[in-house]
Length: 174
Image (cartoon, rainbow, N blue to C red; front, side, top):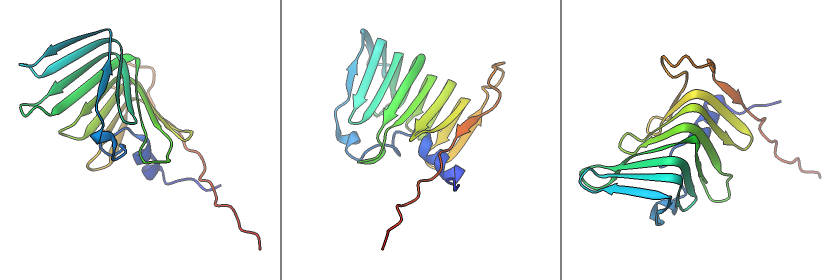
């Protein structure tokens, strides 16, 4: 049985808004649904509470509380989704399956192009799973780090992965 290269698999599994977005997602409007919203233009901060659902094209983020901050130029700086679990999904390319990510906290740092999943973090795609207490993905360098949250005393002390075998192309009969 032949398995996919684990490094390539990790790079395809871990959440990255800029890398996993359909090209048209960025051009779509952002829709936010929540029970309440608190917007502070001076601080460049918005806090949405109560079954928050954010969508933009194929991107979907859900959580109990989602905080969005903007930098001085008005661009999104970070978003933090908190839930039990918070959830993220996106379709990387047309015709490809969705990437699903879960964690008690999901943070996206737009300027650093970094995604951090903490608290029962899990990423799933095409039956492949990657789990750890903390998963960090640097999208520019395509470096993945996973493991325990420092000083957490958590029971999950190891990273768990399930890698599906690579599908073989159908053999032609002559």
